Length: 211
Length: 185
Image (tube, rainbow over all chains, first blue to last red; front, side, top):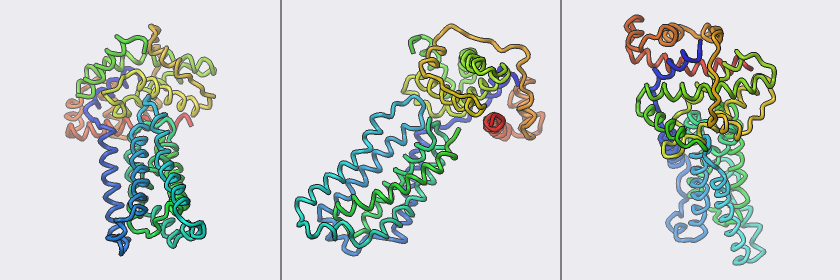
């Protein structure tokens, strides 16, 4: 086939169109819905949610996880578009980490050192390490499928960012169930679960997001 | 891009193309192709690859521009998008062909801006790639590309609906893109 012929062919296909932003937005909404349905049908709020909601520690967990979901989403909307600079959104991924570290430092100041270990180890680390990855599966699948329409320079990296978004969504739901509210617990266990999801995203993305 | 009038022109064609204007799309692709060819030939010559392989690379990049055009944000300039996409695809394509591939982005930008163009030689057919498409995709591709029929004429001749022809055509383009990737592995 001559190149001119190929151009004729492509032009005839011009009516089929899509918008990457729109596809990603739909995937994000679908992912949140799937994770939400899974959470409310299988996990649910903690029993003392009414009193928990009045404590700063409980609420600050959401500041961290929502910051993660939000900054990672911004990076995800940019990473699949050739020529769009990534530096700023890559740095902004540190915001949730800064929040978590800052909260942990404050915690060390306001609590006696004898309680630090108990606060850090918590009661629910196994649940944290299973529920966050499990709730991430739905959103990750939606986001990776949507990202197939994109054109990332590094498919593995794009998959990792999708993993980060999914883990952020999953951690936000899970935080409403977990009764370990200490920032020390959050800083130790949440990142392990999040990294696991990120790794899966990177590995799947490396193959699935090649174009 | 340092050639603002060209970029403005290409961007306006691209906007019209996305809005459904086939003629603008044709103009854009026809204008870009000679520049792509300069880049592909230069790289292939560097590695002693035949020029038919360079034309494969050109077609692969054209398909990538087409299939990934939804990743261009119409509110952003077209130049950086085009240069980054072309560069990534070029590296990917050359790497799969076993050529060590480093393509500086500046080179891509410079070539898109330059007046240097290359037209295809006469014996540039790459029939082999077409032969590997399945029917009805192959018949549709031949009818539209080589015989120059429209989608409607092709649909009437094959007793298919226009929508079915369009869907098959879109699948064929995706399949071609995959075939290019597979043959160079």
